[in-house]
Length: 118
Image 1 (cartoon, one colour):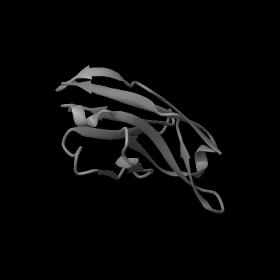
Image 2: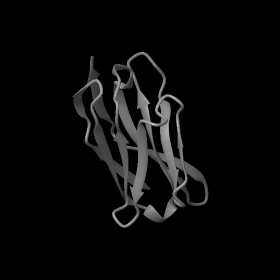
Image 3: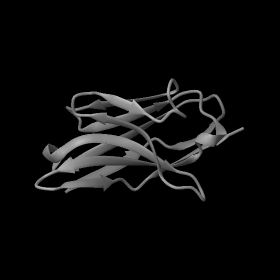
């Protein structure tokens, strides 16, 4: 199993920046890709960004050009740099790890709150 611990959320004014971090531990070898999802009140959880072991990244259209996902394989950590934040970015952000060890799976972090004030 993979354990994920997020940090870096908080309150920021519109136009500001935050960086989220997610440290992975456990069965690191089974991770194929890591990503960030978010869930706003009353809405479904949605993909924000994902990055593969090879470093290929994909983003939701709503964050392209503003958010950057990166990973430090030596530290088993993935980051989400969020610039030009908007009130609609307010949500709980969850780190994810897609794994394969005989079968596919997905692990989740506990979530970190990001609040953007107007």
